[in-house]
Amino acid sequence: MKQRIDGVTPPYEPETDRALHRWMPPGVAREPLMLFKVLERHPELASRMRALGAGLLVHGRLSDADRELVIARVTARSGCAYEWGVHIATYAEAAGLTAEQVALTATGAPDDPAWSARQSALLHAVDELHAGSQLSDAAWSGLRAHLDERESLELLVLAGWYRTIAYVANGVRVEGEPWAAAFPAASSDGPGFPDGR
Image (cartoon, rainbow, N blue to C red; front, side, top):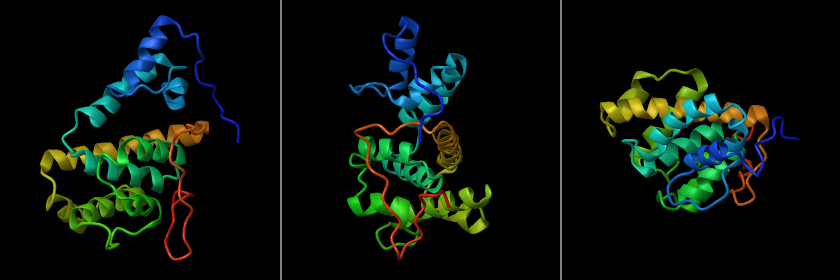
């Protein structure tokens, strides 16, 4: 399927070039992501979005492991192969996710034995939020057994933020980055989420 809104293309205007590089995490030498190039078609919106995105990614209270697990699950549940692949390729290994766990973020259940109790609690919360935009008392208690109040609030914002990113990437049909991880196919014995269910 063809991308619905083209990203900005080089040579970039100086302000566009600065904006694109502000989107990229510190120390990353890759070309700015196509998603960022698309968002820069609306610089005012992109600027407002960048502040929250950077705050969650670089300055958040959640550990890298918690953050990346939540992002992977939200994007998988939203059927957003683009953002799932970018984060898995860039952050999964450093966040300590095993190859099995990476695949399970897109095809597995929160109670799979590959997950710790903490990871299972995070996945249960994401799945409930995805299904009905609510958390049961059991899911909230599960979160609070592992996260403090501020971390719990941040998890809710993080999940919502990456749901928004999934809407943008899927709605525009952003073309995949050539280096991104491939979204796993659903197995016959697992739930699978390539269609966002």
